[in-house]
Image 1 (cartoon, rainbow, N blue to C red):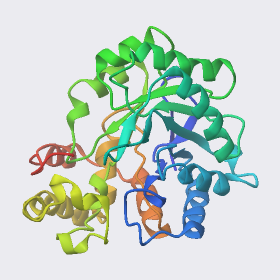
Image 2: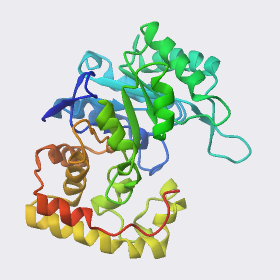
Image 3: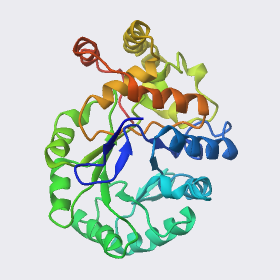
Image 4: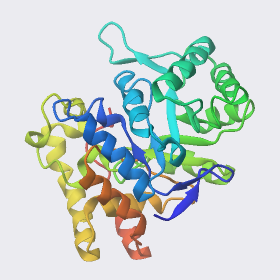
Length: 318
């Protein structure tokens, strides 16, 4: 796989990474298999998809344990390992809550390192800014992890340009992780241009529209039982049916190029900047290989123009 760097000063990584969330959290709870997930994580490294992304909230906690198991036995040295802090199990019926207090960050990094079976992570990310804690305070605690050798670099997730600037005043920002795909393009307006200008890595999560852009969901009947996506506006029956038109255009381009819809969707994301490293999630070797192959797909200016012209999806993100 061709490579880039994680921002202008970061480590070299494959241009497509691997998101591990769905291996233990949110998606298809009845279709998980830890042994296969370990195979996928190790297979990603073999394919050159070296950025492995997890978080303490995924599970919670057992995703990091799974990643740690997969990276044991010499695989850790081959990975650029990223995890996150700042979301915690929710209360009162809420799925998740925020905790950006510095004392929580200090405790959480040590717990993450234990679960991951390593003495440091390559990238420690603030999963969400806690509205009750100034970002400077939380970011300062992440910077302490760098000073202590527990993290090589730190990043942000789902932030505004103003929040990035405030963090930069405290410590360099290595990366920003936000949703970006053919059906979620909000970051193109301000955040991605700013990260490019600043030499900050940009890590798109859900670059395949939570599987929709891979062509997996023609109707609600295709969603696995008890899958979190069934609660999202874009996956409701009427919206899902309407969004098939968007997918149909992606299919047309894929057929013309001899590629899959997932590969075309990922290639479009990759074309958005020098330091863009999408982290599609999968827990199957087949989809892993399909996603990794997108790194070798070249879209023409005409292809990109057609994809840029796709309509906005029906339904909100959440």
